Image 1 (tube, rainbow, N blue to C red):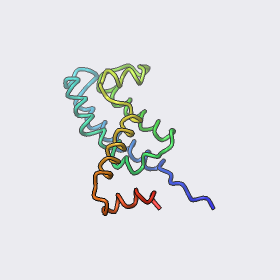
Image 2: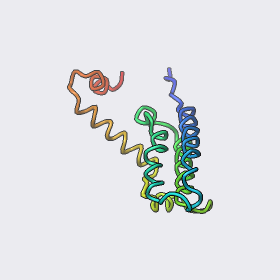
Image 3: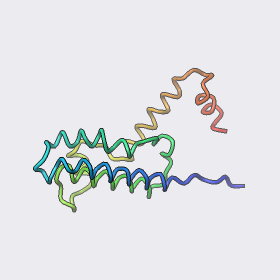
Length: 136
C-alpha cells in the first residue's frame, strides 16, 4: 500500500501571497530608484520579506520543483523592484547584483543547519529519537 505524499503546494502559494503583501508595503519606500538606498532596500527584503518565504521551510522543504519555482519567481520580482531592474532582466543576474542566494540554495542551507541542530541535541531528545528511527 502506498503512503499518501504530502503536498506543499498550498503552503508555497500562501508564502508567495504573504511575500507579495509585504513587498507591496515596502515598495512604498522606493519609487524606481528614487527612494531609499539600494542596500537599505536589500536589508528590508532580507528582514521583512524573505522571512515569509522561509517560514518553517525545513518542514516543507521537500516540495516539488514547480512550487520552488513559485518561491523563486516571488523573490526575483521583489529584488527587481528593489534594484530597479527591467522586467526582462535575468533572474540569476538580479540575485547576484542584490547579493541574495537563489531560493533553492537557501532552502538547502537552512535544512542543513536544522539537521545539524537536531544532531547536536541529546540522544534522548524526541527529534533525535525520531531521526535515529528513520521517522517511523
